[in-house]
Every structure is written in C-alpha cells, then in structure tokens.
Amino acid sequence: MKYDMYNEILEQPESLKKTLSAEKSHMKDIAEKIKEMDKIYLVGCGSSLSTCYSARDAIGFLSDMNIEVYTGYEFAYNKNLQKTNSAIILTSQSGETADTLAALRKAKENGIYTISITNEPESSMVKESDDSIVTHCGRETAILGTKTYITQILCLYEILFSIEGSLEAKKVLDDLEQIPTIIGDLIKGTEEDNRILAEKYKDEEIFYCMGSGPNYGLAYKTAMTMFMEGALKHACPLYSGEFRHGLIERAEKNVPIIFLEAGLPGDELTTKAIEFSNKIEVNTIIFNMNNYSNIHPLLSPFILLIPLEWFIYYLSHYNGEDPGSTRHIGKVRY
Image (tube, rainbow, N blue to C red; front, side):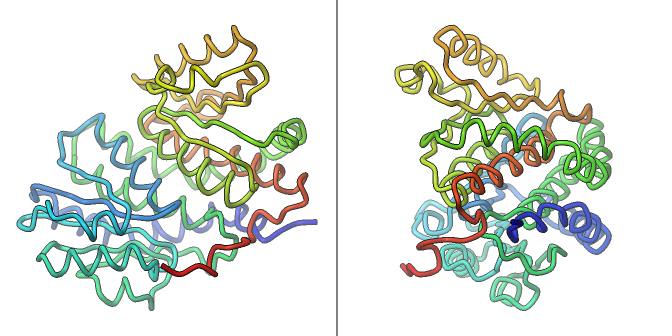
C-alpha cells in the first residue's frame, strides 16, 4: 500500500523547480529590500520552525547577520522586540497557522517589515503580510511536510545567502540550483536501503536525533514531526555539542541514536559522540552527507532529508500507520 506521503516525496524535485522558476527573482528583490536591516526574525511552528533553525545556523557560518528564531506565540508574547529597521520572515505550509498568524500581527503592530513564505496564495498570511513568497507545491495532504518543507528551506536559503553576498555564499547559491536534480536522484537511490533500515528498527519506541549547525534544524524536524507525528514514536532532538550534557547518561546498549553529519566544524563533536556510542554498543544510525552528495556542506539538510523521509515512511508502514495521518492535530485548538 502507498500512502499520500509516498507521492509527495516523489513530487519534491518538481516543486523545487517550480518554486525557483516562479519566485527566484522575487526572492532576490526581497533580499535587496532587507539587506541593510539591523535585525531579522525567523518564525515558524513545527516543520516550519525547523527550517528557521537550519537557515539561521547555516548563514551563521558565513555572516554576522543579527537573526533570531522564534516559534509563533513566543514571538507574539515577547516584549523585547526591535521595532525599527527590522524584518520578520514567517513560514507556514497553510498560511493559516494560528501561532504564526499571531506573530505576524504582532510584528505589524510594531512596524516590523513582514514577509510570509507559504504554499497557499489565498491564505491569511499572504493577504496580511507586506510581502510574500508562494511555494509552488500543489496541495500537500500528508502531515509530515515533505515538498512544502524543502521548498520553504529553499526560499530561506535563497534570501539569506543573497543578502550575505560573499564568494562563499555565491557557492552555496550556485549549488542550490542543483538541488532539484540531486533530490530526484536521491529519491530513486535511497528508498530501498532505508526501507530495510526501517524494517530493522520497526520495534523500537524511542529515538534520539542529533546534528550540528544546520543539521540541528533537520534533527528537530526528524524528531518532532517525522518520528512523533508520522511514525508515532517517541523522539528527542539535540545539538551534537549537547551529547555529553544529558544524553551521555542515557545512551545505552541498543538504544537507537540518529547522527546527521556533513563535515561542518561542529561535526567534530558529532564524531566524538559516535565514537563513544559505538564503544558502549549504542545502535548508531548515521546519515553522512558525503555518502550522498559532494555539494556545499551547508546544504546538507536538503540532502539528508531524503533518506530520512524514506526511513520514516517505511517505519510508519511497518507499524501499520499512515505517515500522513494524525490522531489529534487539527482537532485541538488553542
């Protein structure tokens, strides 16, 4: 049986191509508008929040841009906002996320320049923002966020690395153009290995997910929305550098820990955590960017996402769950 998520994984390359074709020049214009601003806020919830973490941590390797990340209501309740010469970029698949809309309205009340990234051109966020970017994915029905997630992070990278403007940032943007083709190849080439991996781990009930730099955002998505919402497994995300502050006391024989690696400076600590875990016979599950692509390592969330999607898809399947359905999301209103 194939669930909705299966087809939406396959649709990612075309969604990326369409979004780049339709929105690239607009994203360059937005970058030009906000490049002299003193503060940029990135706001999202769930998978959209994880795109903000990845984009902030990626650009932080190259730039001293003043960027802060908030989840929706945390921004809305914050009294310490910079109200002048600042911008906020809000990400939401539907453009109707209540938390994110609250943040948008708070920003507008305070005179902050507002930019929305969403998949729904008629959404409240598009109508209320000063500017907006529409991801061209078609309707997404699976809860996990595949094609909308990857196009959101594409848009954030395109804007922030265009602002930074250095030679290294240009290399990232040049490699970003290759992402749709690379993703297409990865979708075909990583399904079977991760189906087998999922069958191996189908009976586990808790997973830890670790990453450094922009891969922390992906670890956050993997744990918070992919494992917990999709596969209905307990999961916890951590920065690699935090392994020895807590998890080191719970890492035990046969406990599964997912490590995301890309050869970034913080991955020195990822490697140390893997070495320690192997010594005590932890079930280390390693997704290393070098095994999938040789493009710029700051683009690793795009690359590592694909094998993780297949792993979660089949983990759900082997547990008799539809990875695109929910039990409570959508029924609970705050």
